[in-house]
Image (cartoon, rainbow, N blue to C red; front, side, top):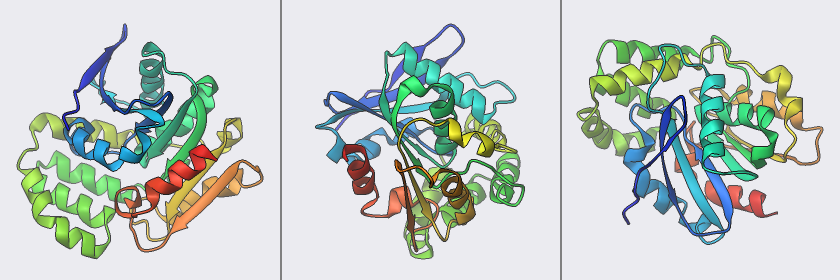
Length: 267
């Protein structure tokens, strides 16, 4: 499978994305913070979400190409919403993972016409200093140019020990391909998470919501998902599921994760 990488351009910026599937409905994925662009993994993403392709056309958005020196989650969300509007996307089913989930929260609040249903994976509406500690270490490693240390720390924090052990050599190989530009972009994007807080605005979300968390989330902590649940569980259209044993990146490691998303979207 060869997935073409496309670019959407607005008056202010350009943004790369890819799409696959032929369904009438639209499913948008906003990936989490990464050392390198999600576009490099387009084929793997398409394979992972193959079960969606009959009912959906799936769009996966990168962050904008030209990053400003300071780039907040709100700015990332607003730019992504602008890119979606430029492509004529409306009433989409939206899945945001980790940092992408933070962006998805803002989009659902500020652009309700864009979102039909919302899925949040291992994310937070309120990043406390203690929850930012892991990201702070990643920023330190990136600024020091420690590519291998950064990739290994990523793997160790995102995955359960057994998965990390299997992925270690692949992570080290990927680290060799990281450019100085990748590191600079990573620092800007990672800094955008600092002090993010929309916890007092969750009631603005109008669409049904599924929040999926992990009790052993070593990046943001399970409390991040539970805080979202505490604010939204009074609503009959809110659903919560918590994994045990899969790590922060359960969206990549739990075998039934995408089945849960699909079941929620089609209910």
